[in-house]
Image: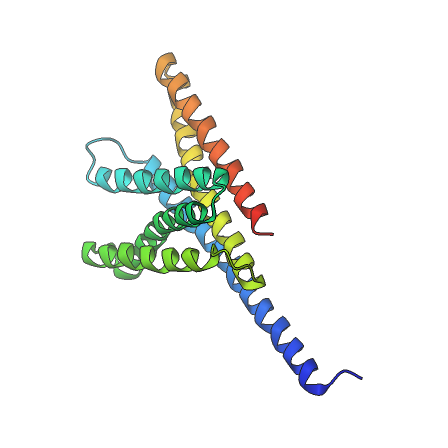
Length: 202
């Protein structure tokens, strides 16, 4: 006979894990939605347009997240692995925080800054906890979700640069198209390396 207390603790454990998995799935789907909206909006901007500075910020932060998660996948030492995961997640958090604050406030700059800071702190702290050397089911689940989020950032850059690559091809700008094609492949590689981080959390 299994004691009633043991049965209750197991039930509580599985319920908590189910809630955590549902929350992580929601976070991943929300990230995909947010990045899609932001990238499609960025593709409609041109240098010198009123919102070009936002495009530069978006691309810059996504590039940081992409490079950091790619480098993280090669890190052998735990402190470096954890540090790079935190950096990548902090950059991802800045993008998501900006999106949430912008939508909630009607694109007000002050709230966008609050969103950047809040997103950086929230996802950075979560990643610092998840990528600790101590392994637990909760840390592994959160680490996998963060790896997917950071990988989506890399894929978003690859998608955006890929669209510019196709535009350069259509305009017969061969040198620019060659550069953009190489950059697209590099960020697709970073997306693939994020899956390595995901597998490392198994």
